Length: 423
Image (tube, helix red, strand yellow):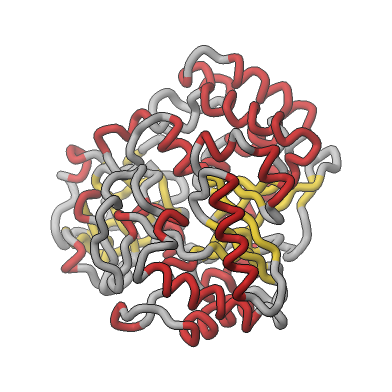
């Protein structure tokens, strides 16, 4: 199963502790954590594709494929392995030519929308976690930075972030973005991405507990959020920045925290929200009236919609990105947005999966925030898409009785979202 695009070649090392910069690391999903040394590539044994650890692999641009435990048994310690995270090919061949070298894809434009075959404008924004990724977004042709995952900005040694730290790191991201508009998501913490500076808190357990803005009134999160807001106030006069509140469920939450933000900012900035629950998405009319930026977090939305923890392999099959019920829901949300659906930014893995982008465009969505490396390929898909055809396809997908039929409509292999091949 291909996951992170790119190609890597190296000697097999089993376990993160053994990882070297020239190695291909084979690691079980339940042991996946931050790498001390960035490996050449990763073979992940099992996985939950929508989980935060796997999303981090995307943001770190480590070529990755996912295999079954039975498949992993053939990878002997020290053997030479080549992997292709773009096509899902793993090779044990000793041939030097087994895998070609890979470099970051280049785009012909930056800061401008892309256009479908029939002239409809589509924005391909970038989701980033640091200045390196922001620079990559420029190289890959991002329309703007749609989502800065500021929770991954952590001082050396895991210390608690301060205003000065946020000023430095956020300014570096804006500088790397070269005047592109930047949407900064205020720190979005949850149990599975709890930083070193934060201890365990009651109520954080499970995927539906305290997270996002639900933690903003609790120390030490409250102090860190205030420090980040104050830092944004410092850089707002120099950069085109907006703030996004994470995991907002009710309009009342947004009104409360927007008010606090505005009180702390000397320089006004646009303030928006990311909708990650069905209840939030179904309040689309209210968000369109009060929020400057509106995003839908598809990863968490799918977790809530299908009642399946995105970090558990055991229920991963329920998080089916080709389930017709998912597209029916997104169609209804687009209808609630009426003529303003072009204001709604879709984030997460969904727009980046094989064949999904034309369906989402057919439902009316025109703004997507994705990993920078995916932008050139998605731009190609946009340029080859006719909106009338994609609307007909989206209608067929929504009318399908099951995901098997959806895969047939999209000319995808039966089974999982990705295919696995060995050579």
